[in-house]
Image (cartoon, rainbow, N blue to C red; front, side, top):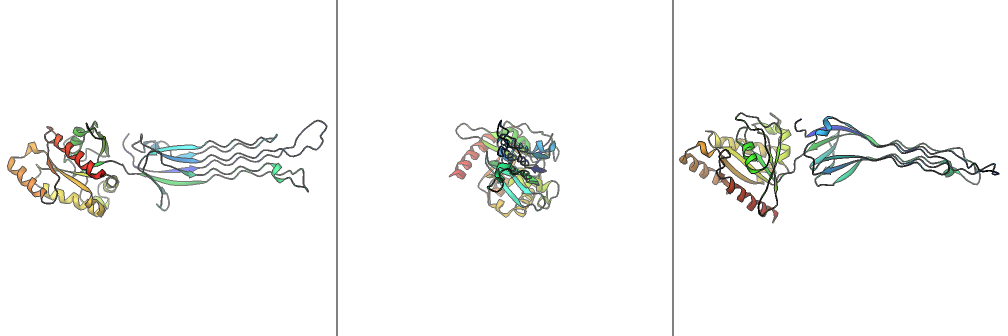
Length: 331
């Protein structure tokens, strides 16, 4: 069905139940006192972050979320039941915004984070609430209040430990399938990956880490060229960036500069993010070219690793390096 990372939706809290006008009917008591129950409160619409979800696919099929209205009050002082809440589950990393203004309402960054998106209306009062010395048989009750309603927008920023970036066809998908249990679609033409892919890298002596393959960026991505903004958003929350470069491409140095610029234009802070430069497709270049490129990139990054995602060369060393960097980041 594909990856969905933004959606617009409507929420409405349940209306409150109405209060009741009722009087006691007892034998030999011609004028029993008031005994109308209050209406129940309407349910709330609650949004909760769940680690088990990775996309907003459910919003493709449903865009209206309404809580149950409160029950009306009844005679014999029976209060109406509260309406059931409407619980919406969204992925961790979801940002909820006002639909009209784009103002951020809440950023759900941890499993179990939740907030009330639309409160239910209060229940109306039954007639005993209006009894007084002057009026012992009030014949009035109030209606329940209407529940809150609004249009909201949800945007998803994947939360991953490691983000793979690079031009289309640099070999990120093949690398992801090598490092993790993910099985992305792989082919030798640009833009095979049209949605972020998540994989889990298991270590022997370290907690597993989540890797996100951010689809191929292109020049002008920060301005929204291609699917630029959609994908750059997901890089923001990654702790480490692996910049994958096709070393068999004659323009490999230029290609690196292109992506580095796009990251900086999108968000300056990304330049200071821990980066690993992965020179991929080693099996397609000669030794002289390998040495030249390693020397060039080592001038401005101490984490330069040569691999062949296709043959598996260098993958173990890259995995060891990631453990080392993750430990440093945690400290």
